[in-house]
Length: 223
Picture (tube, rainbow, N blue to C red):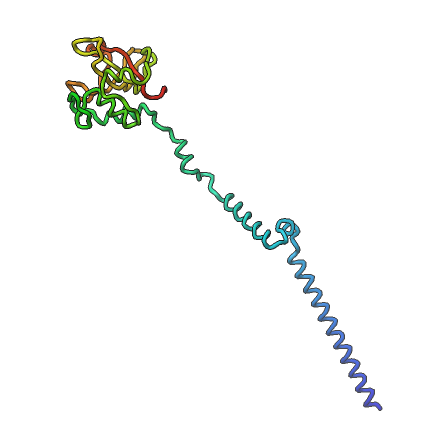
């Protein structure tokens, strides 16, 4: 009888220990879950930002990547075409003069159309053709082409200037291109194919040209 009670007491103790162990394990598991939940809280902002649909989530991710890429673009990066537009372009008249000067020293020959030899009207027509302007290679025709420059105060770089012949001052016989204008002195410099010096630059106040000057025509746009 005593032995039976002894075993009964041992069983009760074992049952109590087992129950306590189970309770402890459950308690530890609950504590662990609570700790994990506290360490990784739900970000309500993320739930609002990303749609539930997987397709919509992909689109949202793509949009976010594009926005990030755009925000990381350097402020100094400017498209090539805009950068070129900011650079100051040389005026057309300056380009014409610069090109005409490439032929300085080329000898004169009546009727020569260049580029190794020129007469005056072929020289002007050759230069302007480079920029898309067609001039008749004859001085008497060029004075009717383009637009009339009515007074010296309206003269500008790139204009055609005309002079009389040696034997007949009032008859058109020579043409050149204005290089610069001095409004204070009432003079201009011009480049032309001279009989004696070939392609050269002269000033309008030279006695020979001053007494033979007839007028000017404008082929290029107004400045």
